[in-house]
Amino acid sequence: MSNTPSLRIALSWSLLAVAAGAGAAACGGPDGHPLSAQPYDAAQQVAFNGPGENRKAPLDKPLEVTAKGDDGRITDVTAVDEAGHHLAGELSADGTRWRSTAPLAAGARYTLKVATENGEGAPGARTLTFDTAPAKKVLKVELGPEPGKYGVGQPLTAKLGAPVTTKAGRAAVERALKVRSTPSVTGSWYWVDDKLLHFRPKEYWPAGATVTLTGNLEGVPVGNGMYGTATAPLKITIGDRVEAITDAGAHHMTVKRNGKVINSIPVTTGKPGFSTRNGTKVVLEKSYFVRMRGTTVGIPEGTSDSYDLPVYYATRVTWSGEYVHAAPWSVGSQGYANVSHGCVGMSTGNAAWFYENIRRGDLVTVVNSLGRPMDPFGNGFGDWNVPWDKWRKGSAVLAGTRDGATPADGARLRPQAL
Image (cartoon, rainbow, N blue to C red; front, top):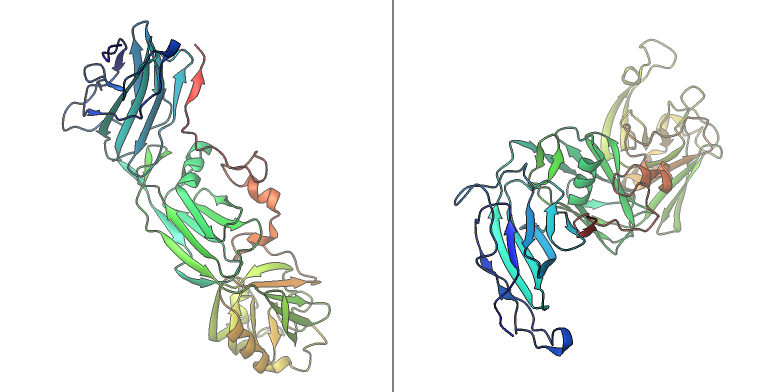
C-alpha cells in the first residue's frame, strides 16, 4: 500500500517548528496488509496557528489538534516541556480532536507529539516544538531546613512568597515539590496556611536515610496569573532514631537510640501554672549558653515567679521558650517534684550528656504532664501530634484518596464524549 497518508491534520496555531516523528516498525495492518516501516510524515498537514516565527506562544490560549477527513483519526497526543511537566488534555472519543485542558507553563519549550492512523490503519506521526511567553507574576519558594544531618522527626518545609488559595493551584505546587527518600517512605505535604507547607512521612524517617527535595516549579501555573520560579534542590541526611521521653508524673526522662535505652535521667518539669506541654516535639536548635528571663514569657519583674538566669547546655524544642537544659539550682527536686517554669531541667552533667547526644530533628516527648497539648504548628514542629488520616486531609492532592494511593498527575489523555 502507499505510504501517502489520507489523513489531514490541523492545529489551531500557525507553524512554529516542525520535525519528523519517529516510530517503531509495525508487523501488519488490517486483513494482513503490510504497514510501512515507520509512521508517515505529515509535513503539510500539521500547523500551529499563532504568534509566528521568533515569537512566544501566549499563556492564555489552549492547544488544539484536529483531524480533517473521514478516513483517519488521532490516536495519541502528548505535550511535555523541558522540565518534564506534561500538559493535560482531552481526546474526543472519535479521535477527531484533542484540546489542552490546563494552562501552559511560562517561559518553557514544549515538544508536542501527535500520533495518527488513516482509514487503512497506517500510522502517522508529527513532532513539533514551540516556546511560551515568560511569566509576568512569579511565585518564589524557600525550601527548608538548610542542608545537613537531622533526626528522624525533622519535617521538610516550603515557604511561598505569595498566598496560593485555590485547590488546583495548591495541587500544582505539591506535585512540583518532589520528595525522594532512600529508603523510600510514604509521606505527604500539609498546608499549614496559604503560604506554608510541611512534609512528613507517615511514620518517622528511617535512620540513615537520604532525603532530597526538588522544587520543579519553574514556569508552573499556580493560579491568579502566577507562575513558579526555579528553586535549588535541598538534600539532608537522617541520623539514628533518638527519642527522649519525659514522664512528668514520674519525674524521669528515658533516652533511646534506635529503640534501645541508653540513659535514664531524673528531671523536673513545669510546676502548676507553668506545666510543660504534653506531646511530641522536635529539637529546633542547641545553645551552649542562653540567658533566660521571666519577662520573655510574660512574668513581671519583682514577682515571686520572676527569674533572670544563665543557663547552659540548652536544647530548644519550642519557639516560645521551652528547653531541655542544665538546672543546678533544682537538683534536689529532680526525680521527685516539678518546680520549673515549663522547661525540662536536669543536672549539669546530665544536661551536657543530653546536649552531646541530641541533634536537630530528634524527638522529645512529654507525657503525664498537666500542661496543654503541644501546638501542631506555629511554636516549633508539633507535626507528629497530628494523626496520619488528618494529616492527609491537609494535602490538596491526597485529600479524599485512599491511604497509599498515588494520584495521577492529571496529564494523561482522557476520552471525551461528543
